[in-house]
Image (cartoon, rainbow, N blue to C red; front, side, top):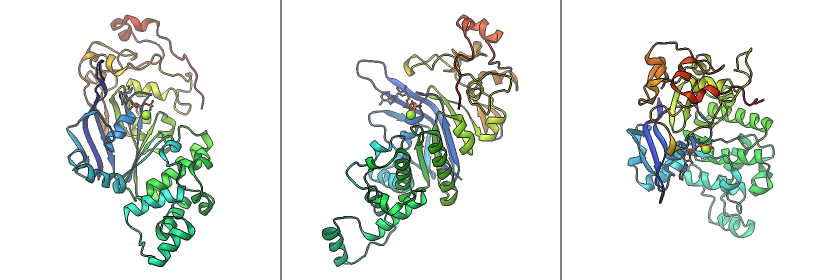
Length: 372
Ligand SMILES: Nc1ncnc2c1ncn2[C@@H]1O[C@H](COP(=O)(O)OP(=O)(O)OP(=O)(O)O)[C@@H](O)[C@H]1O
Ligand SMILES: [Mg+2]
């Protein structure tokens, strides 16, 4: 079943005294129930804006879409009160920086307990006497059942001594522990979907691997779906069932992870794959894509990637097409209107590219070596 179904999402930020910023333009995104869906792309491609549009946390932005359904209901037709309910009970968000997302003056146990209590699936009827004792003797406002659930959740997300950690404040914990706390807090509302915006980007690789494992395991165990935002295709390969590749506000390609990695269709996806050690061609060097993405207000007409694409040709200034590569695997590249298996060479500008765009002649490849 499709949990989240977004079609043709556009998000524009009005800017006083300057041109508006069309941050996201024509994005389709589907997340199936129970799956981990990766949303990948370079910095500035619109991943966080897309994520926040799902929580309706885009103050001041103009948001439009042909469809924006969660469980078949239009999220943008809901009242703010109904939306608060969705944020508490249905969709939870995990951010990159737990230190700023968590409350600094509340123990982590209390914070998780509050989510649990708000969700309302614990029996808090401990009796007036014990309520009073808890409040005035122990000094904690948190009631017994939700506190127990909080400790349980800390254990669930792999915290070694949950009872002790529950009583600490966010700044007393390591970065990895804080991310786990935020995940526990997200699970406290028993959501069907977790939107995780680069949840492990700030951590070192071993801690990252542990947390990604945990997330995968939790999604399996609780049947929770996740939209996992990352700029790292290696993370997608390890963790995700399917993936949407974004570039400069648009979707370039989407499909199941195996389809995308075995048979990448878009030149941008092919370029990204060359930059991860496991996927680069054995004879080639690890290389990032030369150049950088345009600012939203300076995007060219048609395909936003065309100025960096080694296979760009005349048609690329036309609106993005949609080409079905395989069942569930779609690319938005003009090359496919001509035939099914166009040649894309990342080993240097192709003739077609240099014919169309003089600027590509001095483009170099393998400018930077990334290692994992
Ligand atoms: N509040 C805002 N006002 C104006 N422009 C914004 C605002 N928020 C985001 N943008 C612009 O929207 C575009 C997409 O930003 P977004 O944060 O979604 O990128 P991202 O893919 O999450 O990048 P990163 O990997 O760096 O997190 C960027 O050009 C950004 O500058
Ligand atoms: Mg972001």
